[in-house]
Length: 361
Ligand SMILES: *Cc1c(COP(=O)(O)O)cnc(C)c1O
Image (cartoon, rainbow, N blue to C red):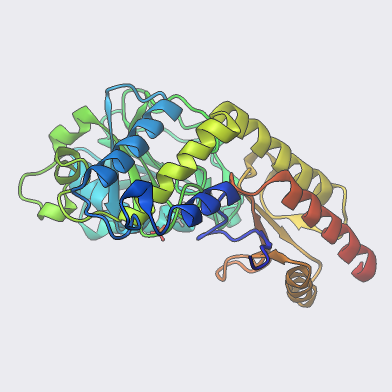
């Protein structure tokens, strides 16, 4: 086996090693089929079991009960930016959005393109999206309130979700989905591009409350309607079989190896606080997000200048710490520490950061 590095990529991102090993083990002969999971029919019992298991695990992990559908939709999180207003807007009612960064901005743009009555009720753009807004008023008449639970690029996260009264919440949870437990009851829809925390890229996992589907307009193109996916268990056409298979294995790892979302959250908090504590005690590294808004998933920080940042990223890679470059739109450094990144990776990173500071600081 080739070497594996400590992977801090933002997405596609690290997958749990036991999951990769399981994939490797059953790649040539999936459960006695004599085929890989990429070669079996999506109409076969083999794949049916896989997708049903993935749905059931999602329902168990998040206590969804019977009120929600779990769907797998191609096109990543970005297609959801347009599908949500297309399917769930209500004529004569505004769409409320909170803008906390690059991804929220894109979601807002896609709703506006469709000529919807979009209202941005709060934004942290005034301070380069370095915080989560606290002052906002949700329009009681709104069809939904959309927010991004974790801001992958800016390194901020909603510690507690916005309160919206009777207005259904809709959240882009791409980069913190399944990182912590939460109460789903205020949510009309939750979506996550799989490649951050639960699997390979190209697919979004979408959780939609059943009553929300009454809003879906009949005249939409077939593949852009949520009902097409809910009525056929995400198999109106050929789904992303390999992605769904991998997602199921990651969820199995979460349930059986980690022990569920409470334990996952405890581990994630320990990882993030180790890294933030180190940064806070250093005068060399500087966190970019406000302390009460910091993300447990994407730790963004700067060094005294860009030359040092370049050297930091290059030297880190030489010691097998990969993916520490900040998003191209903001620069700096970012350590993405999703579920699959263990405490061993954090310890290795902190040791490297201390060493680098000693040499350069
Ligand atoms: C990565 C990311 C996206 C985009 O996901 P795609 O699957 O590439 O469309 C959207 N929202 C958030 C919060 C992300 O982190």
